[in-house]
Length: 188
Length: 125
Image 1: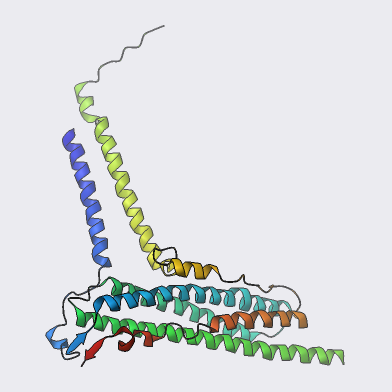
Image 2 (image 1 turned 30 degrees about the vertical axis):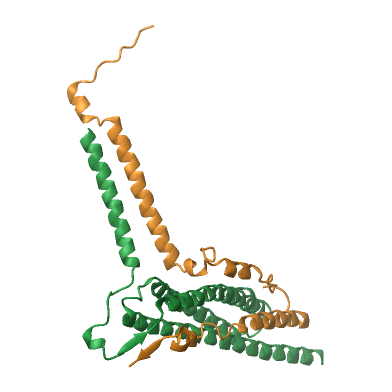
């Protein structure tokens, strides 16, 4: 009787331990140690104050978090509270808003791309903040360069979204001119 | 009134029935394991869904949390109604205001912030 309860308890604890261990291993960064001999030609020496670099990266990461929330909220407002509503109103008034609908669709796609790319960048940044840079300086520096590249992609996404917002506004102005022209013709 | 006498359980039936203590331990252990698995699943979904990137309630983000709460209430545009001069003016005003607010961060995520100089790194090829 006691043996069965003991076996069940041990099995439950082992299973919990295995699951926890698997989760912690997957959360760690990749290969440990310095670069392989074939990679040594990339950088002969990398000098950094590890704690200082991590502190600055942490500051950048905190700023990025706020910026992501602010921009995300702005883009959501643009898409759902402005573009979609104007497009709906154009359809209700039986006007030609094809260009506006196309740009709104592009904006939505670009927004989704921004979300995906930011998630990838944020994961890389979190890995950097958790990684050991004291004993694996060169590898850490290479990972930093990769994270910088991911950040550049997010930066480009922000530029794309800004361009689309301007395009939508330009198309809106064209539509407005058409509406005003039609109204003048009707009044004559 | 007939008094009911509890009959002793035969030996083979007693052997088939698990003791109360064993079932209790198994129940508690099973509940712990299931709870642990559900926690891991929820954490996985939290990270993969993108909610983690928008979560400012994490420790160390208090300053960012206070800044985020200061954003003004957004004036929305109605999805129905005529598209007259007033409606077009209203839309233009709201849109340009929102666009200006977003463009204040148009240089956000500048990759140059991760250059060697700002991080004080020296790397020789």
